[in-house]
Image 1 (cartoon, rainbow over the protein chains, first blue to last red):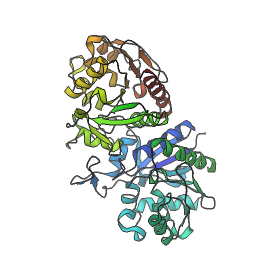
Image 2 (spheres, helix red, strand yellow):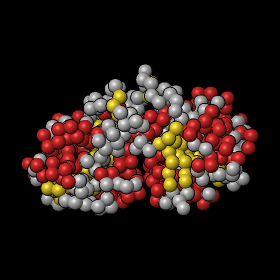
Image 3 (cartoon, rainbow over the protein chains, first blue to last red):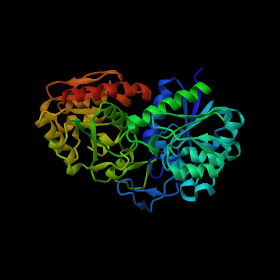
Image 4 (cartoon, chains in turn red, purple):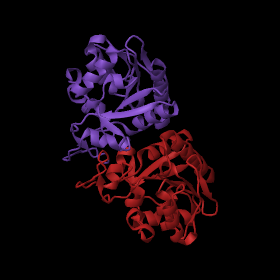
Length: 218
Length: 218
């Protein structure tokens, strides 16, 4: 039977939501591997809306679940309805939404709070030894949620972010965009993606490895 | 020198803009092939905004260029600033935006009007024998713009849309999702993508062939 893989989205757009390329590449490689995909997002307002042409903050309000539905072509459920028992693994694409809407790491750094539903599902996953994949900046939110377990992750090689991860109880490993970092004991797989770039083909290489590794751990 | 390929976006989301998977897959295969990508979109309001969770029309207003910038990670220009001399080929991903914002084919069928800047650039491209790729429903807009040249395209196998294409002066060829239709004389390449689906891996096969063929015609 096909493995059921949750994909946790955080909006739709690199500056205020899920990074669109990272999310779509995750779906592509999961589909190619024969996985059954279950997209989900929290039903909550985005921290803010960024005009992606000007990079200025807009006065609009948008909902994380509603905007994430654009990436999922409407096939998405409210995160609060998903339990770890429903899925075999969970993957979180990056984009600022992963650190603005799934937690407030982008604002508060090591003092960040994780969205309660994200905290709940990540806790359930790791309690059941089910694998978690996290892309780009999403590992910072994973570390914040699972700090008591000393997760080992990568966000690439950004010194400040690596230090913040260490101060939250995580361990940071430098990693190239085409590679992955695997925390075997916690079953957490991470890749830097657009934390390093430079282009979509480079990001795709690391995300394909992440998807394959997560599936192999199920 | 890298071939310069324009990617004409129509918003961000299948129901009111560019189909996100089709757009991202286009960027992926262009980048893998070593092309230089130039994203563009018209600076105009979307026909409307659809809530992609409920599929209901929202009372919001969004701008096609601003929303397309989400897919392009901000690396996008106003269509009106692009001439055919700036690019070697043009690819138009699908999604309802290609038939709501680039033309009004989704509303007016064979009586559709094409956005003036889209009409201009498509005319310039074909006048210079530069190739055009069109995905999903985008071929309907291409036929509407270039009806005098009897373009041969596919949108899959939808009888009503095929008839509308014929009544606009085009010729429709049935085609599977993994394949492409090539109009050698007009240098137009089309693939059905999510007009047929069913999934992202299937759509990716046809889009990769389309990108390769467009590049081979440059």
